[in-house]
Structures are given as C-alpha cells and as structure tokens.
Image (cartoon, rainbow, N blue to C red):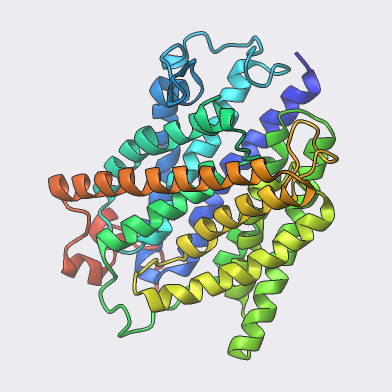
Length: 405
C-alpha cells in the first residue's frame, strides 16, 4: 500500500463528490426562478440514493467477479470483503475501500447529469424511482463492461475517466427521458431564460475544479499519467470555452456568458475518455473540436424538436461520443504504455473496438432507459400536473421558494 496514492485518491474522491453540488448550482442557475430548488434537489438526492445502492449492491455488480462478461457477481454485496487492504484486481496500491468510494462518486453524478434533460417538469418521487432503477440496470452493468473486466474491456475498449460510462450513458438517457416526459409547457411559444447566470458561472468553476479529480484521479496513483490527465483536462476545457465562443460570436454576433460555460463543460466532457491516453497537442485539438461540435449539436436540438432543457444530449452525450472517437484516433502508447495506439498511429483494430463500444453502450442505454422511463410513468406518472408546472417545482414539490422578493 502506498500512502501517497491513497491520499491522492481520497482527495480526488472528494473533488468528484464536489461536482454533484456544483452541478446542482450550474443547472439551478439555468432554470427559471420558480424551479431552482427542485432542480438542485434532484442532484442532491442522488448523493443519498446512489451511495446507499452502491454500498449494498451497485459496487458488487460493477466490480465484483466477472460473470460471462456481462455483470459482476455478488462477492462484494454490502461491501463484504471491501476493507483496508488493497484489492488485487483494482488499484493495488490503495485500500480497497478507497477505490470503492472513489468509484461511488462517479456513480452519484451520472444520474444527476440526466436531470438537466427534464428539468422543470418531473415529479420528485418519480425521479427517485428512476434513479434507483437506472443506477442498477444501466450504470452498474456498463461500468462492469468497461472498468470491471467485462466484455468490452476484453475487446480492448478504453475509457480513461467516463466518456462511455458516464457521459454517453447520461446523454442517451437524457434523450430518452426528454422524449418520453415531453416538452415543457410553452415550449417553442415562450422563451425559457436562465434566471441567474452568475450561479451557472460558479457551478462551472466548481465543476472544472472537481474535474481534476475526475480525470486526474482516474490514474489511481501519483504518477506521470495522473499529471498528463490533469494537464490535458485543463487544456481541453480552456479550448472548448474558446471555440464555442468563437463559433457563437460568428453565428449570433455576440459571445455570451452561457456560451463560455457551455463550451468549457463540452471540452471537459470530451477529453474525459482520452485524458490519460493522448498528448497535449491532441488535447488542444479535442477541446477545440468539442466546443464547435457540441455547439452545433445544441443548435440541432431546436430542429429535432425534443426539449432537452439544459443541453445534456448536446454537451455530455455528444461530448462523450466525440471524445471516445478521438481516443480511437489519437491515443498513443508513447503517452501511456498501458493504453493503445489510435488509428493515426496504426491502431485500426483499436479504433474499431471504440466504435463497437459506442454502439453497444448507446443501444443498451437507450433501450433500458426507455423501458425504465415507461415503467415509472405507468406506475406513478413522470410529470407534475399542469397547474403544478405553472406554479413551479419549488412550491408544488417541496413547499418552499428560493428567493423572498
């Protein structure tokens, strides 16, 4: 056991946990004033719900002994055998319990990210059931396929910190829920303006800060790969912010604060799968591409007609997909000997593996999320009543208001 690695991973776990309250502030500033607390609560409750599930079932399903490449066994149910000794299978220089809690933070933020797609209109109790079912039936299996030694890992699919496991799953789930829940009342007839963009800027800064634990910590040790991932993360976030603003400036004649925040998150999300496998110049390219492509994806939403309230699909879904493709192109063993060479370095088979990973995770997430969403809607209804939606989730779902004005 290595004391430096242990301290590093504990700090990284704290940074990743910070990202969920940061996300709630980021999302909260983007909704209308009457829905900020309801939006924040949907993120905060994931900390409780997913932590409980992770302890008693989720961790074992994700990282337990492999069963035919599909799911983990129940060896670690209720964290049986997960203690202070290192794990022989994962992060062998830190206590097993440290690796477990670090992975728990990823499991927490993923369903919280989805909430931006149906912001301002889903029942709180319906979201609770959705989060439980989705975490067990989607997140844990996909996590096992890639990080737990499952079939995609055996195929050679790489995902450094969650481009597939976190961002593509939440992006696809966001698309499904936005379609099934339906658009907000007044969609395309009235403007839904963010009520507090300074809150969103604060949330962006906290997310960016937490992302260093998200990506850097995924090296699971204090080493050169952690340093590379840390630097690549910042570079891609900065380039994403800039390219989104430039394109927005050209297209809409003005650079906006919201565009800057969105571009930064797009760059950070897109570098996530590749952070520990590519060099600095690749990170610059990925960040610039992320800002431009995700901006265009958000514009396409308006033509497609679905109401993804806070652009989860266009930023996280497209970003996760794009980053995984870029990893298949730009990865090099010169950066990470335990990684692979991408297509530009002769790795055709690796690039094909990444494509298979995208298709497998995307299709599975879409189908299972659709079933879960329809099931929840059938037994308790997904949406609040029309008059409750008009009044706002803060009052109708939680009996409180954010501002006394």
